[in-house]
Image 1 (cartoon, rainbow, N blue to C red):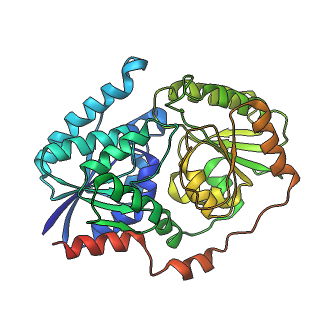
Image 2: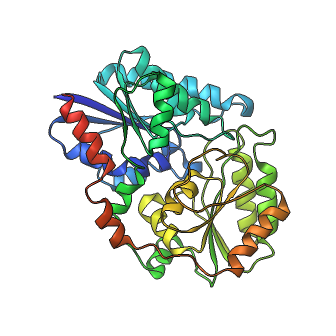
Length: 373
């Protein structure tokens, strides 16, 4: 029996890999272990391990790391800390494969530990581009350390091939969000309100804004201009937490202070979890910020998306996205467009399921791992 480990450090990773994780647990051909670390175990970012436990996942290894480092040294210190705790866990589990998604510095730490321990790395969503984030080069480094690659689009597959100078074990399976949508159940606005405390108005915006780690000001000016612009529009707004990158504490404080000024219209939920988040993408009028979920998930769902600044610069888009600079006028004009123009085409979930039912990314990954035994 092959032993497989999978690492997750954030709510976004877990949401995308949720179906894969549950299928691996149910598969009797694998001995599966889930490694949980970083913001999953941190109260300030919603302690999202609760979402994992609510899914009934019991094969958990909790790997806490420190978050109280000096601001300038926080990311390298956390990376070093993650390498230590993951190395110990991997040495105890001794998996044949470690599955990793994306580009986070915690994920890079996991890849480094696995590579040095001689463990095969399976990398998901490699070959993508985000020129405004430090993650871009980390993603490429993880691909270089990996033996098996599953990309979200053919253009990403080609990039990985060019990077590692090989066509072996590189597969385009589509974005993992397909799995979430195939297993997705819609809820009503009233149910969403009951679960989150949010109140819907005529116009409703969902905002997720992360640090822009390659920018001199970490994207803080873009957030300031966004908050200033929002004051001019009559709408209800739901904010979620930023990633735990350099500058996230500043962004989180600014968001929470903004929400405190008008609790009737502004709301904050640290993490929605995948099910509520996908419902939010369908229920809200526009997704605003600089998150990859706007580029990938929201655009696939044919939602209005305003992408601010350079964080996602270069990323392949799965649908229509309004890219704007981070100045006040550009942001304000983009929001004004959302108010002036009618809603776009409504996403047809049933048609989507019919089209993709035989193309589950998780099933393709599992089939490869079974064949590789």
